[in-house]
Amino acid sequence: MVSASLKAVTLTYVQYQRGDQLGHFLAWISLVPVFISFGGFFCHFFFRRELQGMFFFVGLVISQIINELIKDFFQQARPETCAILEMCDSHGWPSSHSQYMFFFATYFTLLTYKGIGLWDTNNKLAVVFLPWVLALLTIYSRVYLGYHTVAQVFAGSAFGLFLGAVWFWVVNSVLYRSFPMIEESWFGRYFYIKDTSHIPNVLRFEYDNARDARSKLAAKIN
Image (spheres, rainbow, N blue to C red):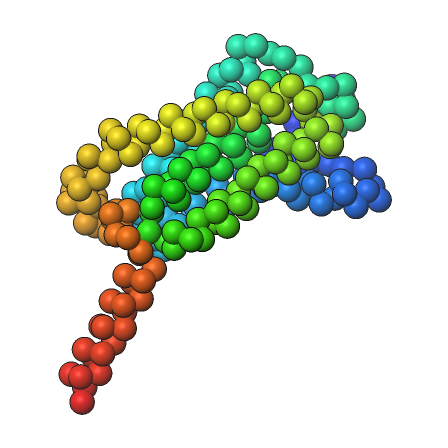
């Protein structure tokens, strides 16, 4: 009886050379897109339910679909090291990790400088610094660990940068007009979907309203 060939679930499957501390660190860096998707966005949807965040995630999904279509069209092989990493059954150009992270960093930066209301104007540079560091470390990790060539991660980065900017324009110049309608729909009211991007400082707004509500409650009790 001939056994069927096995295929790994590569979502969290990252290999590195045993004893390579830098490789170990970069293997975790390669998982940042997974942490953002299943940690960051899931928590955002559950606790915040902001339309800006939802459309941000939709853009990342569209970007990844485009990435898979491009890969299937060009069918460029991964580097020779993929045989050791057991990754030869998928195409390499452009790098999906690089595209994801540069889309994320681009959109996040534009959203921050547009003024999503979560941070002070003086702190915007510090806020957008981390996503770009993670994006650069991610593309380096994909080459260092042998999953992609330099050309493949550069292509993914370029596509991510372009698509992130285009999607930001689509959301904030076209789709933004429908935000009030979504908020007032049965779906928006039932799930408490909201848009607070018009509020200058959301953290301060929520903080002041929470204190005000507590004061009113204390006044009623007394």
